[in-house]
Length: 427
Ligand code: HEM
Ligand SMILES: *[C@@H]1O[C@H](CO)[C@@H](O)[C@H](O)[C@H]1NC(C)=O
Ligand SMILES: *[C@@H]1O[C@H](CO)[C@@H](O)[C@H](O)[C@H]1NC(C)=O
Image (cartoon, rainbow, N blue to C red; front, side):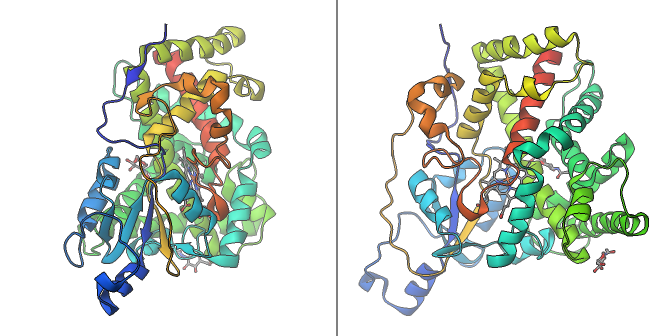
């Protein structure tokens, strides 16, 4: 009965997570000593060109829609450093659990300049834990009911209604509009569009080659970053003058009301969330639609489930409720399956703080028909333990350990609602 769609991608991944370790220790070892004398064996792979190495390929791969192709090779010289690229779930988990101990999160300077040095992504230690706690608190499951449910649907319908009559739906518009709305709390279409454009320039620059000369994407991004900060600064000023931000449900407003971050850390905090949330959410939506169009049985099953909410509430105008969200088992399977094969969050980077020996076993066979898009696999009782995305060793689409994605629940809610409006409108 089930028609299983075989995914056509030429790579074999058993996890959606790739961890790049900028392995300084390997570089030092090779510089100082004779490699052959070293007791540490390097993982297989080539080194790329000196200095630039495969950085360009890396940037291109990350910016493209088929990044995993790049990850097939195991050792790369990225950003002028030695790097190990790991697609092994157990190893990745080991790395994530040892954040701040054996490994620490590390990004190129150009990237740090863009997202800001005061944000959670680039922070370490105590400061990172504090910011991570704030972010997790603002977007945890119980908060979603009150602060996001209405707005997500309002912005979603607003954005989707702009794409009537066979026009191509720009899914990335959906994601960025949602992020701008949820983080800054702006709801008017023109304001959302203006901010989305700035953010777009900004993010383009984050994944481009970091040359800060007029005309380059990186330069445009730095300029966009400044304008975004100005906007955030204006909101802070308004809040300080008026003592509240009436009718603003955004993370920024709640951050000012509930927490006491210094002003210069507020902008970076928001920009970090935006950066982490837009690309990942956009890609998940895009891949979900792609996989579903390739797998009509799944699309049909999903439509059936989502149609029941439409007929119950009598039309698209009636918004979904929290209870609706809690009764979409197949939709949740589609999201999990998309995250499993999508390879969404591939830009995790870690620097080894000391020499690390680890038995890397590739070719682990964790999933039957690992390359097939098969949402029903998640209904199998056998897979329930694996499915636990908070601490499964085999399924970690939102990372783990100290840097576990604070936006995970929000992302899932957005994607579920997106799938609802997408299939009931266009299905
Ligand atoms: C499907 C969508 C998403 C996926 C697959 C995803 C995945 C991840 C992963 C794997 C990490 C860990 C990074 C690391 O270990 O270095 C992470 C971190 C993070 N995510 Fe998400 N994410 C998603 C959506 C979001 C959203 C919507 C937000 C916020 C609006 C968000 C905010 C963050 C932040 C701030 C971090 C950094 C946490 C830290 O460094 O302490 N993410 N995400
Ligand atoms: C958001 O992510 C999408 C998908 O990767 C990307 O194309 C787009 O430029 C990003 N937009 C913004 C405004 O950040
Ligand atoms: C925004 O405000 C912060 C803190 O008051 C300040 O340090 C920064 O220079 C301002 N940035 C812009 C672009 O206005």
